[in-house]
Length: 272
Image 1: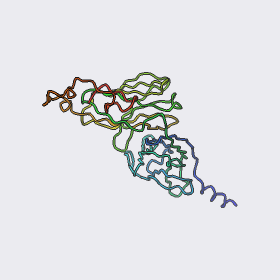
Image 2: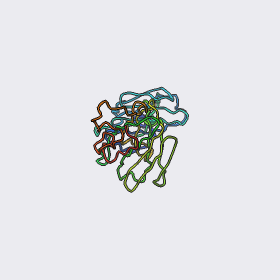
Image 3: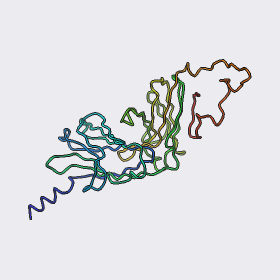
């Protein structure tokens, strides 16, 4: 009987925690998974499905650097004894049970159960494309679901597999304005509207930013903002070869159908 009982224990995961994660169609999520000290050198993985049939989405023994496999990325921070998993380009079909675990040879794996639910948010845009002159500034506005009104909001700049290489966060206790480096952030909680001003960028810093929310230890990336900063000289007005073409004048204000104003949510202070 004692042998059978020991074998039974080995067939189930070790002490596990369970978290619920909400993602948004077209966006992404970042999930943080803790592990016990002493397992820094072990392989980490993220799999999909029930524990008995969990299929790896990413598995790696690489430490302290991002590893990417398709839409999945993993970073094992051995100093903090946590690893981070990012899933990009979410669809509602990604809703499922997942496990992030440590592969411990000869012992029961240590794992965290992740219940991921991906929904389509009618309030929010999936992506925004903008252009601005280098050295100037650009305003972006992103709506978020009312359910996240009290949560921390952020603007992240992507770098490779890391969707949040540079981050500016809203205050945790209240909405309001916050400035960090080149980004000024304002969270209007009454309107569920996050607005950011990104300034003094140069062409080589044309980049992908993300508006999102953080809750219960994970980040949900809702709206991708793709900004192309152009050389200021290339955007300077040139003399018109046809004096009868008043529409070529750079002093004319853009019409409401300008490509820079794709929706009432997109507000720019710099024109192409």
